[in-house]
Length: 291
Image 1: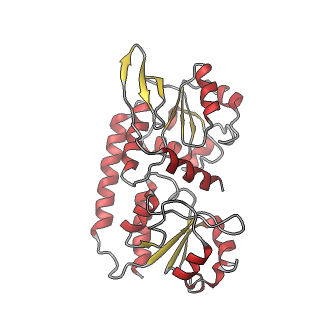
Image 2: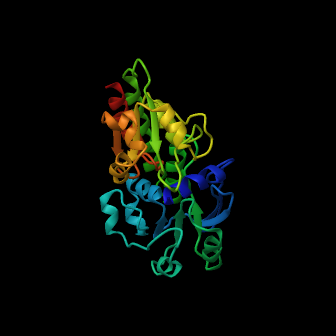
Image 3: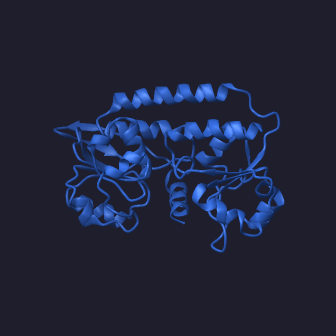
């Protein structure tokens, strides 16, 4: 459900984002984050706390992980992140624990309440929000934003060049002659059925892999179980920790994809976060969809 809330907040708040408007002065500069907040951030940060699994993953990918002095309990990739001080949850953020890390910059995703942002601001600790966007290509914008904030812009550019080349190679092989129908499970069961609609980067990933998202016409995250059963997709995509329960729960257990073993269990974060590993999952899904 945490991931569902994150997705919902992203959809509500990503319109008209403006990354990194800078006005240089002394040792700080003015930065306009994804929510339009103007924050004075250090030109050369030395102690960064990440309040987002995606931010943490990108920090490692650009070689800026040595600057991280704090991360959330959800920042589990790469495995090396476990060596960084765990400051706890996100929505129930422990402000004192964050401050105990003496950060000169905090980089957040979309889950931190505004009142928490204001508290950090009042204490003179800059907090910048870099959040997932609706379209896949915005991954590169986020990498550049985080690279700039961390003082690693060249490393961010190098990573982007590598990812684009990797994606081009992945997309160069032929797509399936007939695109299989696909459903991505965000949430299911008594709490409701949730998936990624057509206005999400997840939809972009499914399409680039050669699949056809059965929820492409949906613009929200809710999806009726009746519509799922009627569509009876060729493939089900689901987080690995949810796969067994989904496959054993009616009416999902009656779906053709479940009965015929076409449920693809994915590790947490590789598809539901906007991170460099998205390129990897496109290739993996593309190979699966060809079978």
